[in-house]
Length: 341
Image 1 (cartoon, rainbow, N blue to C red):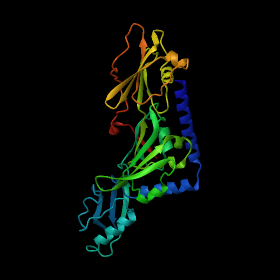
Image 2 (cartoon, rainbow, N blue to C red):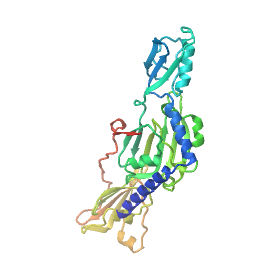
Image 3 (cartoon, one colour):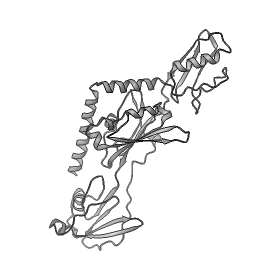
């Protein structure tokens, strides 16, 4: 128990340290922040857009984008205007070109007047406070984890980031800025044909301060801290519990993490239930022999069940049914929303 708390404390302190380091302005970070500013100034899904035709109220327009990325309901122009991930100036030029059939030398101003309906980012999985985020400034993964209270005890060694291309205007050439040592990346096709990005990040690299493992988080990103497979310790221990299999945990260490043996326990009558495909392998263990180094201290695997025997109870022949409440199964839309500005 103490070792796990120490591990969490070290991770949390490491993330805090990285946040402090990130606050020191470097040329790379300035460039990244500038890129974020450029992306934020582009038109996104959910934006409320205002078109002002100078000197004419009749042709003014205000609205949002269609699901395909075109201005929705601009009836005076024959050809639809594609505006998704384009700047206000680019759209203004195209609208002015469309109005040339109706007006003489039209002057058009395009402004994004409301950005509050843009896609939210989600941080879920093995963190203490899963949340949704509305991002209005540059923010990196380590800061997001700190805001969420850090990693939970169920965290494994990996974090994934799914980045839909159409929600944050991140072009494919942004791959040049992507992780190389601390993360792996691939592109995936969505149902709309867009090429979205999928990052896989090693927590160890993030803790070690590898900048490549600390990507900038954009609107619409889904960040998932993967949970380690569970191991269950039940029976004659002081604190029957579920632990994570993120490191090589032996039988003796697992029992220690569950508070050790009770007075009523039988250390020579321990059963390990292990899944092997559709079958369950039963391994009988004598903890006294392990302590005397007369038997192997078996390294546990995900979904192993350790049942410590108790006096007056026969050794189980079949794996028990484990039923634990899992509070992490909260639907993303029900997560609390936090504004990052």
